[in-house]
Image (tube, rainbow, N blue to C red; front, side, top):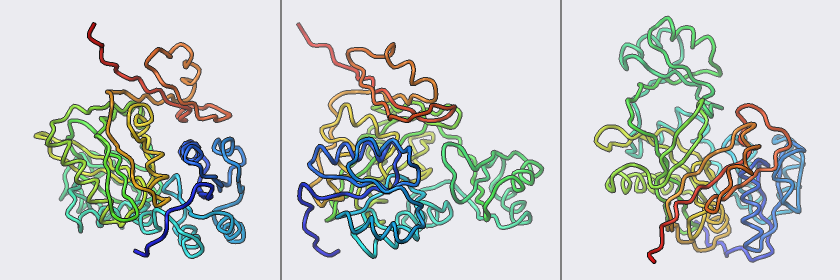
Length: 362
């Protein structure tokens, strides 16, 4: 990798995407002395409230993208569904961190599973599904129940169906698109965890502690740290996450979601090439949180210490739950409100970090 000098304070960081993650990245960048310029098609994006620079344009608007690139010193992104063509175009004009390859891998479940398999990262058994005949054969091979998923644009439980027989599988095939699809063996996991890991410009890696995640209606509800896993499993999760970041030649923060099976065995569920919802707890109890860590990495600065100073439970506030903030606050509760204009069912509006303070001896 070429030896690029670190960004100086006062430089401008371009962020693709204007949601809550872009907002939190912009806030962290400002604390480190950087300016931000956010590019998003939605004029009501909450990140626009905290940035001096903004572009409202489509992700395929090449003149707008070129103008955006000319105004910034490095480009990053807050979500993984940025078109790869957009990322490649910007990468030809300006430093892009993480690179477009990470998006290409994470956007396609089959590409992601192939990448993980080649790099000897354990995943659930799977099969590419191109037609009903292949679906029937794969169902016989993998067994039931199984999970039929789209290869693209699935998140928060969207784009997938649990199938228990060929009749259900055929119905799911008709409902899911685009194709091909991927069939995954149903995994009898004991819990779900995730590790947020940062990788710097020169290959240095810093992983946060594993968080134990609980979902409600397929949307992350809580992330608790420490996770209820053994020290060996926790260490293995950090090592696997670090190995994934290195195999991608990644620069920035990456989220890796795992299934924990009996005996502490780990399978990677998916990777997210960005700061991660299950890492919001780091804001409250870490020496360096995930947002500052990402800004440090893409700026070519040394990574910070990811050490955790207290136990914590992060709780997402979804839809009208945002109205409960005043009643939920306590001495050891840190809120973060995303500034979204409209709350609706299933929409993440903010989060709480409930810190477990140790009692001081008298």
